[in-house]
Image (cartoon, rainbow, N blue to C red; front, side, top):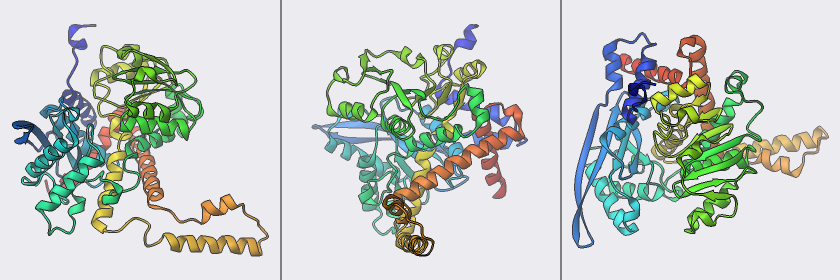
Length: 473
């Protein structure tokens, strides 16, 4: 292998390469392709906060990739690794992700160069509120222009702080609660948002196993039941994806790879037990539900049916792609497979469900939350009991006149109207099924696209181009 072929691309270069490959199959003009590819704007803010008796300066970014639909949408991550290239690449992925799953948002992303573990909760709140002020004064957080969400290093707590700070600055805006998504449920969040990305990964896997031709390509049979799974990263996304496929679909999570070490159990790891142990603060080595070994980057190369990379970008690259033994990779993280590694894996026959589709559950349910906030009403509030009454009448009539006797369990499940979380999950499931079908349709119509990633980008680029053309650009 030549030296040039082993030289790895950075995250942004990988995204551009994947984009360019898909764009080459379209008949869209080169000028329009360039317009779609480039980031509209990236804002860098540097602000000081007085902490521990001294002034500390922080650097933050908010990138707006495309405003073909507004508001633009994208998470905010807290990490020392945050930089402009990463934020712009993530914003681009958000544009194409929302276009693919038909969520009416443009793409954006943000980040703050900070290690949250270095600061107390009170200090983090002061930093977050000041960061929010810097974004708000530039309309980089706004219910109708730019709507952040949680990402790596942030969660419901940070979104609550951001919303409250924005509300203090805009106390006459009736839609102020829609300025961020991923809020706590008691502060106008939506049930099912915390689990959304992991739940979307589960639904994507279920949809994959409904397609015999895709299973054949991957060398897999049946459904998720009994499949051996390796999960890299047990943060929010990896935890929920692993928990759902194991507890609800019968998959066997045999390995979990974390920074502190690797947990392996050929009989299957109980994900909830492992997560609770990690939250307890006890050393990972004390976990009794599997063999714990030192951190090992080669653990990702272990034999399995399904590999779920759910942490950082670039974990599968030219250095280890040849050694990957998984039959199916589903990208729960953003950009876990580099562009060059993607080519190596495809040549090996590894089936890849790309991040563009696989982790779209978060932004999909964020859209539901935003709609709920703009509508100022909980989903199901107007119709749930009406639906329940009609279902009860139907069951009663069938029992009285048809001589049918339904079990108490059936009646309880059938009669009860759909709750907000039921509706959220149903909407997410429908979105993931529809998007998978859209990718398959593109592959059927243009077999030269060859793989799901290229087909997903192709679909997204075409959708964004149509939006621009329709408004006269």
